[in-house]
Length: 385
Image (cartoon, rainbow, N blue to C red; front, side, top):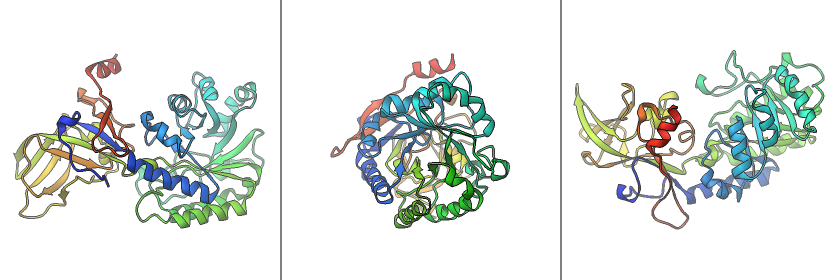
């Protein structure tokens, strides 16, 4: 969790996402250690966080990234300084030339997509290494919204759809079955991959194991992950292995600081309304759903000041469950939501025209944040027309 105590809101705007460089470097050190011990390539998935202000820090440990759109691929090339590993469920003729320019690897979601764009790859000199996404039809992910192998999934090619010989020019395979998952889940996934796709593995030179490897979470069995990857490499010496986690990079590296702007009561429920929004600024809380950790608060305890926390949008469901505090809340008090850097800033909206949280970083050795981005009315206006 964060190493800092709540800071006076006069030090920076509220609401504000705050990254702590020391915690980011802690995660990056572990990820680099896994990369070196296992002899694999680990790259940052921008879909979890695309805060390019911290890319120079990331590059000190991990120099590559993966993209899922033409804008992400361009951001990787422009701000990470290396071509992207790119995958999207579908490409268009309008975007593909730019994707070619910005990518070192492109994974296709279907055989028809590969055949459609293969002439453009060849016209580019076959500079980009092409792969196919496969669907092992196995996943331990419990939430259907985040399960890429759920029945009827549009993600990847099932084994019964692949020809005995992969199309010419296909150099890699790519699967993604995990979501904030354990090393044990990867072990089970690899069994399914070998069982269903083992006969195609000798035909390619790289295997991308996707994301969801939450190796920086407390209790994650890093040694099992390293051992699993080493054994898989030994069994398939023709393959270079690639992992592309997103959450692991930014897991518990910062928080969202908000401020209580009003306290209301209705039907025995007291709600503290904050100057941020779950639906706009913490969408995974409602989509997953999950209840975030609030610094200094606990689950409801009888006899203690207890509040529902509500967002400031007009959406009636813009709230989460109850928390208890040591002291009664007052207007102007800070409410800090822990672990709000991954899958937040990339998914936020400007619904209702609500003020967008600023972005700040606590540099290594500093005791207060430095704001590097504040959003204005013009940002909202320019998105609308």
